[in-house]
Image (cartoon, rainbow, N blue to C red; front, top):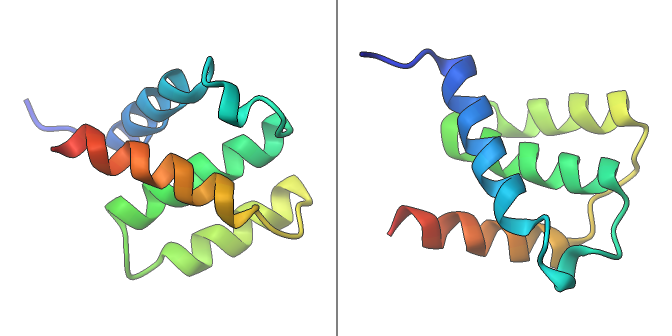
Amino acid sequence: MTRTLPNEFLRRCEWIRLSVINDLRFQGFLPSVMVAAVMSIVSQEIEPNNALDYRNQLMNILNISEVPKGLEMGIGTMSRERKQ
């Protein structure tokens, strides 16, 4: 069974979201900021050549100026650990 790109994107976002939802380090962030960080990381993993475009579109849709670097780095670390 082959996975389509949208299904793979959703699967990875869900895995990361479920991994960080109860982590105390991330509870101070707004849900929209968490979503932006997760989706940005997953789009970087799946489509590295278009990740910046996707990130900019996402930030405009969610009306967020930026994702805190610490949040993105923390979630990104969890995502990389999952792959190993």
